[in-house]
Image 1: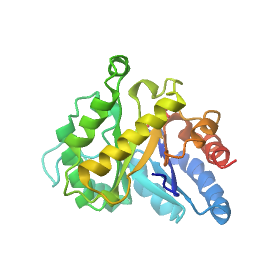
Image 2: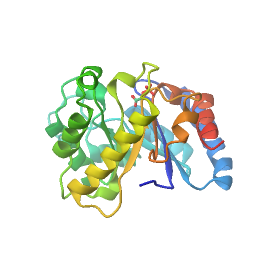
Image 3: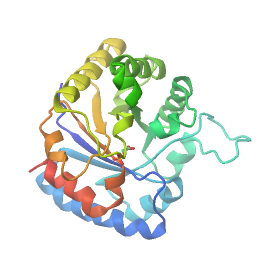
Image 4: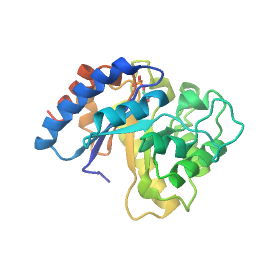
Length: 253
Ligand code: PGA
């Protein structure tokens, strides 16, 4: 159930400009040295669209991949003001895209719409980081498993290439709040997601499932003891090279 490769994915959200190149350069330098000791980690930074091409061309890195944070549900060029398609992201240098983030679900994204986005992203040859998670209210009503089960069933088609989908379990109440689930809750939820996914989509391997929500350089030690967790989607703390690097270092301590 455990994957050897561990993911450290930054989600910059609405943060950064051209001067932020220095942040990503510091992370890149760290990764270049770190890779000599540890080949089992993968670092991805999901940045605002305007920075994708700038970062990927300036960095030209083989230790950090660049990703986007959302894409349009429309596939082809058309009258969709402000929208950017999956294939446009791919052409600008992204290799990954976060989809189904709760901050986008809050703005009205349904499971069905997210399914369309996943389909477009896979067709454009982007790998997908698909976010699922329950709200505080749903957790209080003991609906965590039914909510995340439903999100998986309604947004992933049997025909999708499962090797290109990474799941990120992000309890909505944990994002940016400093609160994290208890260790035994996490183990139960990760086992639930992995078993359900394997059963629903008849995959040979268990999916890669990351944790996201208030991950920092202090609580990472606790997370590192849970072998079912295959990596992390890190929001606020990924906007600082020091904090992000510290998380990776402490994970392997
Ligand atoms: P956070 O965000 O680490 O700031 O809680 C995580 C996310 O939204 O992906």
